Image (cartoon, rainbow, N blue to C red; front, side, top):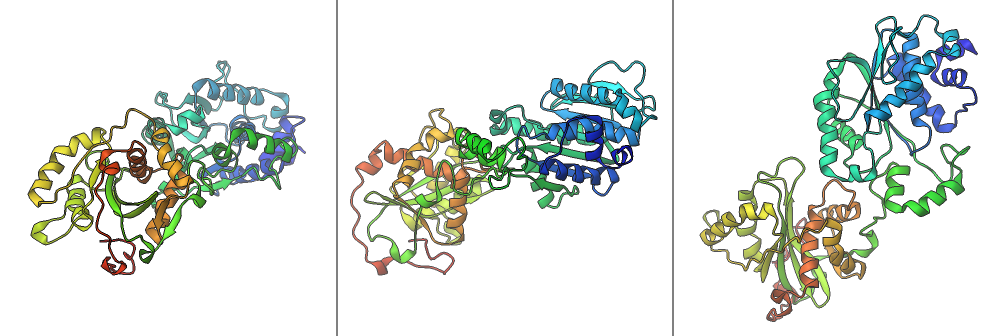
Length: 474
């Protein structure tokens, strides 16, 4: 028993914590962390349901196991708060000070002055340093960095500013404290498509230097990962109370539910160009990014056609670009004989969301409109300070009634995926543009409720372009 407890993490925990029994998921986590200890991998990301014993393994016992093999290792332990990380440190320290531990690793001893629960040293110069997200590391470095649940609550993870702060602290403070050849382990549950784990995975997909070994352990109802404590009945009860979005993220490690939560896939109707009604009134909505369209922010402009109670998304674009490019796409460029959305569709009104991003460019757009001779009534729609879900409620209801039509094809598919991901998705510019249209219709705006009838068009009057653009109507 003692020999195996020195060789594997699972056996070590069983020896030093009598009564602890590994479930299926714990065995997998221990095996993966053994690979880190051996040096097979240096970046490990484990995503599993809350309260499933992950911290016992990674934050309470793993540091003691590592220090048993290499007593001069410096461990940096991070959690959402310094108090929680310090509590992990206390249990790790107590483990090292136990008789069971001394039977396994007699050469690893705590320094005589190591009384603090979150910051202590071994006699060989190694030690444990606990810190909360955003805290200072006081000039310390480490060979092993542990990050256990970087967000203190679900609400924090939904806040883009909070997500940015975690990421900025990781890239600007924590990461440069890990010494060359050091190892990083992140263990948490997913909360948002763009949460800390999501950004690590995306960075790797984008060609970043860190190659993460990613382990995702979902709370499978048919085969619960820790059936001894959370059997199917327990999980079903949690699922019923938590709701689909939180269940999908926290327990299934999938922060974008396949069926959607705010918008459902089956609500959207699809069309081809030949299916469009002959008479439509057209309108333009837009959601604008900060100046420059930097980072993950998109400028999104959409043309909508109304026929009776039905709403057709006809044309438009979403692009990470500057406002002069957006202006060219909307207004056209006479010198290049390049038509824009306004010339092609002659919308009755343009409804931009009247936020600070629009206010910053409204004067420029008006000036360009006069210069290019592409005139359209512009009526900014006030955001009224409401959050995105409230602003999208009217459009959500229209989708649920089967009134919203999206073109067949790749662009339509991608647009629907963003709606399905809302409000947990990384981007929501398409939803914002649609929400403006829904609010305008719901408020019975004069530009719509009193719009003059347009002459009926025959099917052959529509200019059908290439196969790729066949759903865009002139």
